[in-house]
Image 1: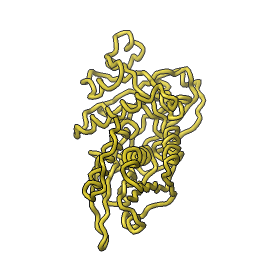
Image 2: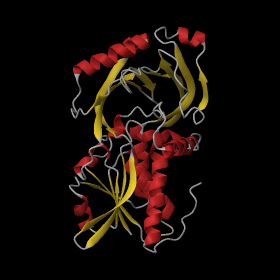
Image 3: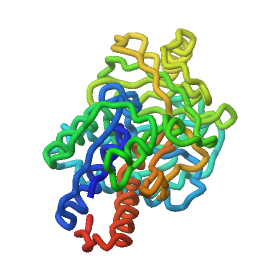
Image 4: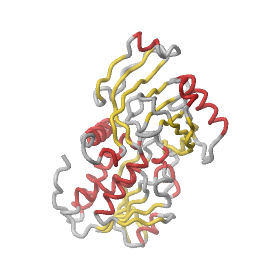
Length: 347
């Protein structure tokens, strides 16, 4: 069975690993290749702050709640493993701040120790009158991609830097199944009017005294449009930019000013922090993520495509649950082709 995964961000690499873990012993030979024109450190994943936190609104697809939970539980299971540092994984606690009361998020029982802020805590943030505190996970994208790449190479997965122009091109190359993890660029392979870039700009600073994440919310302005401060393992990420439909990949000075002033107002000690770098990336925004099978026909040949893209700004938050779902769909393909023996449980 020849499988080609297109895309080398967190969605593509985790999906490749999940499929190999579940089926390499039951399906011989299983040949997996990863095609991408961008590898770490040049993917959208590398720009992400890496905090495990879904959107505060409930997703339209109830399966997404389960995929988020599966990802949190999977990562939490690694928190005390020897791999956690190499994965870029750690526990982190912090605040979500609002100017008025809002309903509890659907993920309140997934994270650890979720509670509402006390009046004394809110005194620390005088512009905000309501909020939550909880412990979550940080998963630094660059480190995690490096760790996933090492695991895949150990398993014999091959990597090819190439720009894929069409599914037909990959099918003609001999693939039996294509896994489409191309994120915001999926529309170049197949038109998708629901998919748009959500441009973000972030800066990373050296501020080791910042220990808690602080995420502010402006329901009128929309998601990601107000300041956020997220400490990682070595640096602190500052952000607050979301521009739907903007394909500009260069940093913008006005956005820089918006981020810096907003975050320094939220945490004044950041004025003494050294800026290490600044990056721009595109969140793959879609009204509903696309995770489904599709049969395509090219001449006399049929090719099975499993789409896995449109994860917005929470790819790291939901990636493993989505990878498990792709692996399940892949198993259906094998069953239909009479190639399947039941894979071992992933639990």
